[in-house]
Length: 118
Image (cartoon, rainbow, N blue to C red; front, side):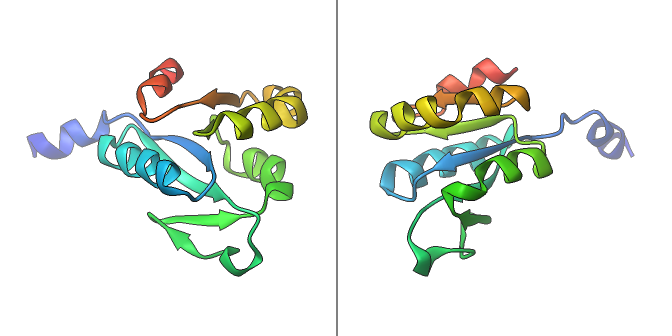
């Protein structure tokens, strides 16, 4: 009973999107999944043969679906592990993401930068 009571106060995981499906993106997703403070809802990938496949329990989706996914799933952060992706998304999506209270983050090799969300 005590365990059930504490589960009622467990914080809801923060929904995020990770840009890319390379090894660093996979590593970030694995780290976040283990922490249980965040839930990776989607990975962004442009390869048509990957569309709507599953990686770490999250769907792979196209870049042009990003804003709709953020809005529909109340995504709180879009995480980039490559600087080139971050700069591209900053130039093309940052203003629109901010309108939906979603942060664009450059996470490098680890998940520590996501602590900014709390």
